[in-house]
Amino acid sequence: MGLTSVLVTIQGPKGSKEVSLVVDTGSEDTWIDKRVLKQIGLEPRFSRTYRTINNARLQREVGPVEIEFMKLRMPCPTVFAEEGDVNVLGVTALEIHGLEVDPRTHELKHAEALAAF
Image (cartoon, rainbow, N blue to C red; front, side, top):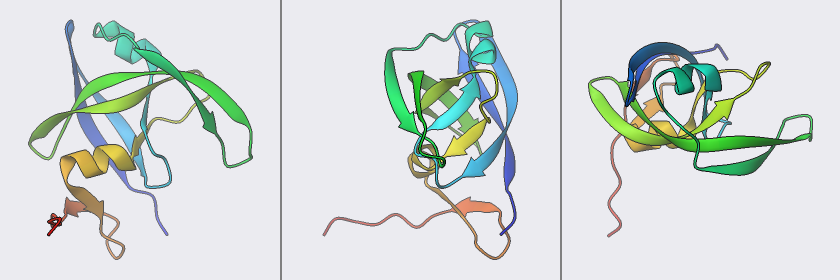
């Protein structure tokens, strides 16, 4: 299985930034360096505890971030990542944007939406 990286644009009250993120379908939320988020005027709204693959627990701040990718800009829950954390695009952002990872090409593609009836 290969890694998929994407270049997204994040929006804030003080401007926008392009950020490279590793697509991680094992991560619920998106993680972006908190210094970058604060540069464009974004602030966290609450703290959340995360469990790592090594079973460690991390406390991180979380807030909504407007993420633009593939011509769609949507707010996504985003962890204000600290030094040593990896910048990732999590599965919640993929679902919000209606995207999925193609298992053959490792590229993102538009997913078919499912109706509840």
